[in-house]
Length: 427
Figure (cartoon, rainbow, N blue to C red):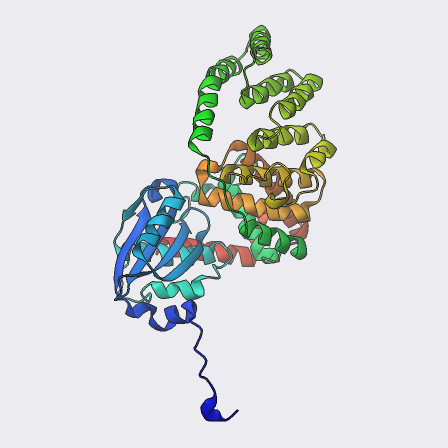
């Protein structure tokens, strides 16, 4: 074919190239931030630029101001303005308009804080940065506090005790030292990549109005039992007869048709507290039979079984599933809380099996949930994180041949990193 008859192939549009080459030429339109960012310690930020056709190019940035800094970002190019309203709706939180200078300082401050804390860099920032203005002296500086200010002075203490210090600060210290020592390569890379791919494909289920109503009703009906239990056990010396009486009442109400999953949880706790493992196991097994299709109830029951050492029973319930998509009881999807609960089950199960290399990926997933939405995080999740964090601490102490407090005080690489963090904080 002659050259003159060859058709010119249209260039494929590349959003990343467009952002890099032209993003900053578009005028900044509006910026938004979650209303409770200061109280929660996590900022969800959106920055938009407007095209001449009325469409928006925008970037989204998640900044953990307490522990990890800039965690995640993404950008969309030339979208209709209503699209960002749909994104806000998916987040399920209140956003308010914010001054660009404020959000700029939060994002770039978060970028520096992430580096100080030895966290993985957000890979997307290499191009989402072009939604932002360049970080120059033209942008006024605002002092944004990062980290746990009240606890920093206590982080390196002679009486350092892993399980009795502020739990999240301690986990943060252990993770920081671990990453500085061993890098960020997972201990089982192949397993990690497969789980990461599956996690990225997870779509959270939303509860419909009826499900929300049922959940609220169950909790309202359960609260009197919980209050009665706490009133008994919170006494300095409680009367065992009172616990027996509450146990009998719960058993009677269940027999008479009270179908509340939390009642089974509470009843098994009572038997466990009394040292009656046989009846505690019986209650958990009855719970599984009573609510075979309720994911939350089933996952809580699995955690109880793991605590009882019934690992084979849990593995049978999971049917070999390592990811949400393979769970036999998740065909209709899982809520965000249930996904986090599943990862907690997997982490706890693998820890009990002494397979710490594979447990690592679920530990990281739970940490992500804890950073992104603390409302999803309970003492159950924290307990599992602390157990795995203790394992990492022991690895560090074996590697250096000294206690964690000595590592923090004596190892040059670690000391320099901490000093740099302190210096940056003062500035």
